[in-house]
View (cartoon, rainbow, N blue to C red):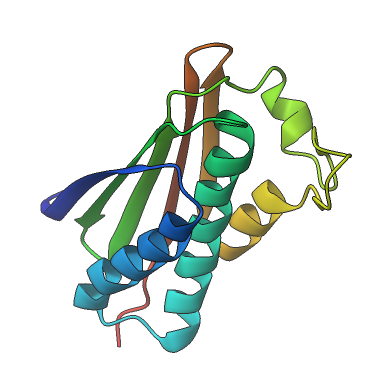
Length: 142
């Protein structure tokens, strides 16, 4: 498959940057002429992934989030990576309603939302090294 375009951004894990990531991804995806619904799905999934990095990976400190996006044919691919604490049990973390922050108002639905809004989601994590979320969405050709 031919890679039509790709971009990599790094930004601090500040909550204000969640909306920045949403905006950047939606602008990048526009070259595929997506529907409003497809853009909304992508933005929501990215929002969940970036929020996870901010809240869980770097709890109590500021770290760096890397957002990589590329397009192959009519598919947008997205990686969101952190160098945070990592996820001890990825399989458990992917279960609906699972949260490590029960003391806060966290629903434990972030990964479930990503999986429902994207065509594919994979999570790779190692304790003390960080987490990478890979997701993709095929955009319908109009």
